[in-house]
Image 1 (cartoon, rainbow over the protein chains, first blue to last red):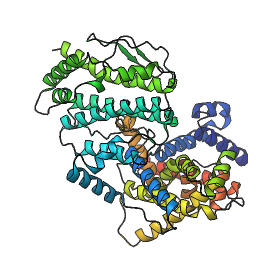
Image 2 (image 1 turned 90 degrees about the vertical axis):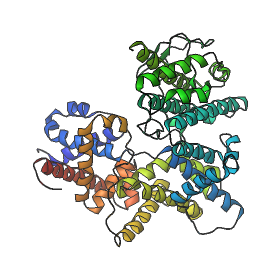
Image 3 (image 1 turned 30 degrees about the vertical axis):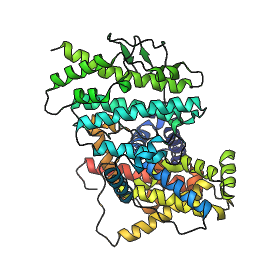
Image 4 (image 1 turned 120 degrees about the horizontal axis):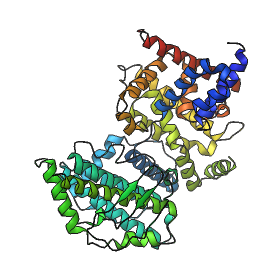
Length: 327
Length: 184
């Protein structure tokens, strides 16, 4: 190494650029060819370390933590300061599970009527997620996801009508996640957990603005639903729906749940039943979604996410058609 | 930066909405910092909550005096960690949590080699000194700048850069030794 101080400075500069995403390893090496041989292994280690450190909190934990923080703040707002006590996570989960089991459609489910922004909304989401976990079969999980999707659509409509659009993106992203999970369940029979990273990616609850969505390059108006096959192109840069979509979330949950996944059925039978279910429900008019897509109050970024959600539901439909055609 | 100063000022005066915004802005960073250090998801979740409860209780007495809010918050996290490690030292070793939700897990499922390499990096960090580990955690997981890390650790910026450099060198050497059949 010719000049240690110079090398240190260059290394620190490149490291800073890598961490902040301003530059790639290759770009840095090109700028400093003299030191490339020594720099490269170190910078590769930096990138690896950065990947190791890039752990994200789960959606469930985020909701639980926020709820506890809100409780803490509400308590100290009306009472004298007291010693901090965080309720252990297992206790929250156990209490929620117990309430769901014991009360069924009672107290916890009363939170189902609350809307985003309400103190109890986190409870609502946590309870819903818990219900997916508690659903023993894939059918049950699918049914729950559909119910959750319908709830998010209704909430989005409510938010637009009440000019409370700050949580729209989060709701649209969740909708997208649910459709991904339904597709996953339909194609794998639920062998993969519904709480995989694809089902509940971090960042969707607390910071909707952090969700990166690339603008749609082409948007078509979504007309009346038909049972015609749709062509959906999903690339890294765009989502283009070239025909009328099928809205999975508006389908009859019993039908699709029964049709989508049954561990005793072969893949081909499951696919055929899913296809039938999609066809029989395709005439349902997703007026709420269409209103959202047509509304001036809904930001383009949210519409993009909604389009992506639609694309997800179309992928399930399309793959069902493809599978059926191959049989 | 000015916006954060305003939020901190408002939060100090009991504005809960301001504190909530600070909470949202720093939640992921604190969680990443904690989880990288203790490598146990459940414990990291509990500890992250405790950090913010502690911050909420203490924000009224926070006075910047050259210590940015971020540095103050990470010091709380660090102190919680010290308590945790002290308690853990009296218990059997906590195993690494292999189910930690890595950001691009979906890709990694198809890239076993990368995943193995990353696990080696985690093991290699055990060879670092405490100060080196702290710098790496603050910079890579917490996303702190050199200046913020320096304020958090009460060191000069030059010292942070030197620690960071030596940590990366050490990691590299340990990884190389592993590749050549050596032990971590």
